[in-house]
Image 1 (spheres, rainbow, N blue to C red):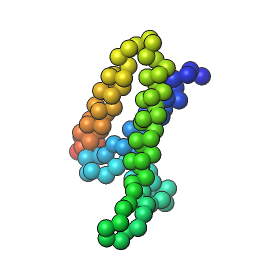
Image 2 (tube, one colour):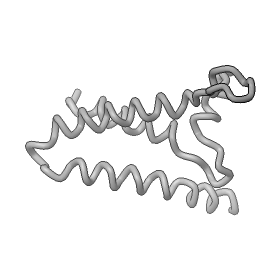
Image 3 (spheres, helix red, strand yellow):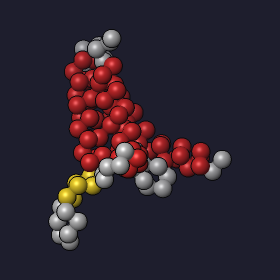
Amino acid sequence: MKKGIPYFLMILAALVLLVQNHQDVSVGDMIFSSLGLDPWIGSSAPGSTRYHLPVIAGLALLVAGIFGTVRLYRAKNPRILSWILLACIGIIYAYPLVTRLIGSL
């Protein structure tokens, strides 16, 4: 197995957890709900702090995946960080548009 595949899969899993469809529903929320888990943890009392698990997991996976990929491929391609960040931003902004187009078919 290639060395960079786990890092690529981490970035891909992070994007799956973080993107939202055209109805502003996070794919991570849908995954957690389908598994029977509440995506929010913490007290629901007014003024208390609640944490969104898909975002926490997604950001952790994204940072670890980007860090590993950049560390592994920077010698071969010095601009790898820029390309990864542009691709992630493009996917996050394009996903709602694609789901809207698919939903209108």
